[in-house]
Image (cartoon, rainbow, N blue to C red; front, side, top):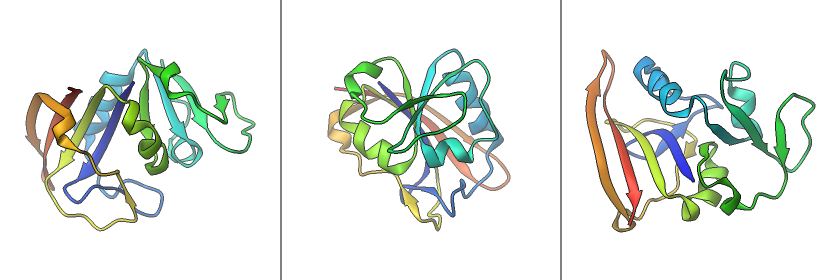
Length: 149
C-alpha cells in the first residue's frame, strides 16, 4: 500500500482538525497521485474533506457506522490494500505504516505548531526515489517519494 501525507519537519500533520497550512501545489499533487485510485482514511479525515473526492473510491475506517455513500471498514486487513492510498489521520498512518511499500511525503520546511503528528519513520528501511523541491510565498517544501527497501 501507499501512504500520502503532507507534514512539517517536526512531523505535524494537523491542528484542530485541519491542516495548519495552505499549499495549493500540494493539493494538486495529491489529486494527481490519487485520482483513479482507492483512498483509505479514518472517520475524522473523511469528515474534514469538502465532500466525496471525484474519481476516487473512498474507504473509511471507523469503529462506528457512517450513513454516507462510502465504503466503511471496521477491522482492516492491511494486506488487502496493496495498491491503495492511506490519506490519514494519525492513527491510521500509525497502523498502516509497517505495511506500506511507498511513501509520498510533502515535507514542509518548517517547525509548525499542531496537535496531530505523523508517526516516526525509520528511514533506514526506505530508499528515496524522487525529490522535487518547491516553494510558495509562505513555505519551502519538497515532494519526496520513498520506496520500502
